[in-house]
Length: 213
Image 1 (cartoon, rainbow, N blue to C red):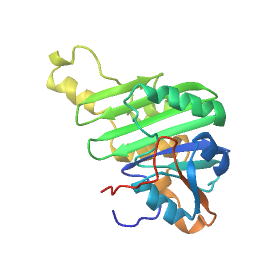
Image 2 (spheres, rainbow, N blue to C red):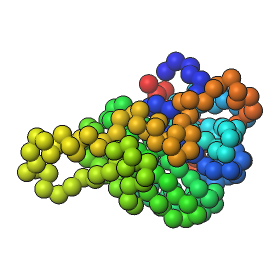
Image 3 (cartoon, rainbow, N blue to C red):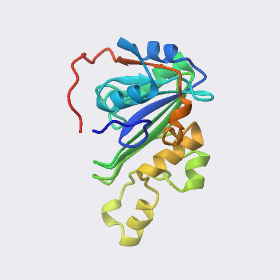
């Protein structure tokens, strides 16, 4: 992957309200920490590890394509409890993910140990494997994320399938949801992020970095 400044597509991240990078790094239990600038940290987190950036107004972002979270993704059973536990330590914690292949798009929000909303769509499978809590006002207004994987789909007509797919998100919709709930990292002006952040590895991750395309 070429060097990038900023992030948003083909990765996962957390948005944490009104917390310092140190507090977020501690909650994630990052080890082998380094102090890195925004461009270097976000670039490295696309390949390995987690970069907790210096706060943008009101929000601290923790980015890691492979390791937010580490060892599983939003479709797997540990995910809800992982986000709940982070929010017990950090208050409001939001999760976003977008991968073009396998068309994996997710968002979730937890507050003080309560999972308020979680949604994930896997386009490759045509499924919504995660649908917890009712759709938020933002989802309803945008018309995305408002339907789960429903019974009886094997009997649907083409029109019913078309209507269902119309509610499923693209990678751009993930960015829109992030902008509605907190901040779209793809819109951050790289030049204004002059403070350093913290790069590190979660507890289950070694310091041997593979190559990720």
